[in-house]
Each structure stands twice: as structure tokens, then as C-alpha cells.
Picture 1 (tube, rainbow, N blue to C red):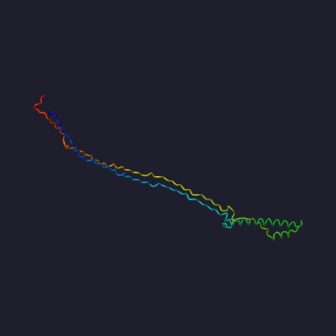
Picture 2: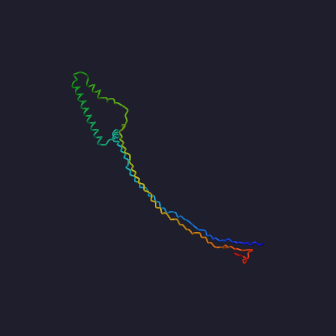
Picture 3: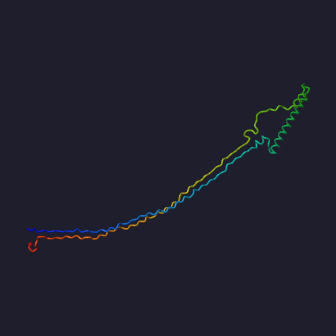
Length: 192
């Protein structure tokens, strides 16, 4: 006995994919930058130092005098010598006038006037300490500095972006199919 059969034959669908990859490029141009540093403003003011040396007293002590100072000093010494001489002559005259009181005034006066008195000597410095007067005023320096800020100018550049999207092309390579075959079945005998 032959059993009826149903034979199913199927074929799967096949598709073909054609893929084009996307492209992308990205560039970042450098920023434009300008930088300038102005010099600082510097002002320097100097008041010069002052040195004064007065050596008038030292020159005087060494014997170097101006004509006017020498004349005044010599006039003073001459006046003093005249007064001393006048006083000595008056004193000697009084001694001679009173000769009757005794003593030997002529011999004693001759002995006094014959010899100069002994000079006193002591250590001394010519010119004396402090005879040269020195005065010094140091200089003053005034410095004024003003810093200037830097000048910065930055110009940013936009990025350059290029994009080409990818693409997928789909085509049917094989369509699906289903075949149904009946084996051992007579259509004419089949009753429903």
C-alpha cells in the first residue's frame, strides 16, 4: 500500500548587501595669536651729591693767608707789641725814677733786655686736627617704574569638518520559494 505524501521544498531568500563606508575628516586650524609686550616706563631722577671742603683754617695755620687777613693779623701783632713796649718802658722808667730806693735797676734792666726769654716747646700738629672742614651730602636717586600690560589678541578658527555618509545598497540575490508536491495522492479519487 502506498501512503500519500506531501513533499515541501523551500528555498530561503538571499539578499546582497553592497556597503560603501562613510568618510569623515576633521581639521582644526591653529588659532591666530598676536602677543605684544610694551616696554615698562622707567623714569630715573638723580640729585647729584655735594661735597664741600673748607681748608681756610688749615692754610691760615700753615702761614698761607689772604693779603687782607695777613694785614689784619700783622696790625694786631704790631699794636700788641707797641702796647707791650710802652708798658715795659713805663715800668723801667718808674724803676729808674726810684733808684734811690736801692738795688741796681740799670744792670737788672740790661740783663733782662740782652737775652730773649726761653721758648716753650710742646708737641703740636700743623695744621691742627679738624682744621679742614668736610661736608658731604649724598645723592638721591628716585626711580619710578610703571609696568605695561601685555596686548594679547587671539582669533579662534572654526574646525573644518567633512562628512560623507555611508551607503548600503540592498538587492535580492535569490527570492524565497515554497514548492508543495503531493505524492501517492490521486486527485480524482480524493473526496472531501
